[in-house]
Picture 1 (cartoon, one colour):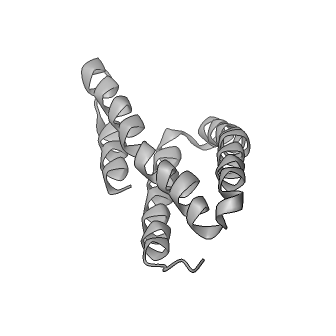
Picture 2: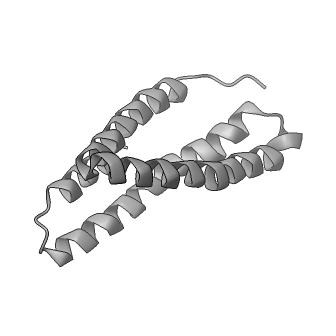
Picture 3: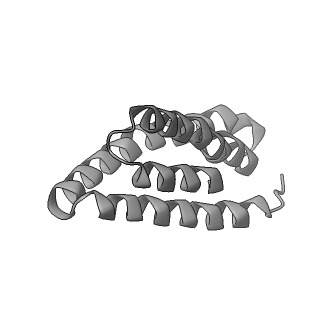
Length: 114
């Protein structure tokens, strides 16, 4: 998430005409976001449930992450960008990255008991 934050900040500050840098930043965001998504969606969910429910837990986190998360995020980002501009969107994304870093750090130090 630290790398995602850095690339989002880079993307925010890129001059408008620099297409190659914009494409590189978008590719980097997609590349670096997979790690935290995997940690939350698979590793975290599988670590908290019994082995019998592992697939169900992974499926539920994927379903709610993709369906609800994407829908709410798209509506929220679109509405906020229309009403307040893109600077607030990038600020919200960076705050979200900081919160994810804090939460993933706290969760990563937890010992799971089966």
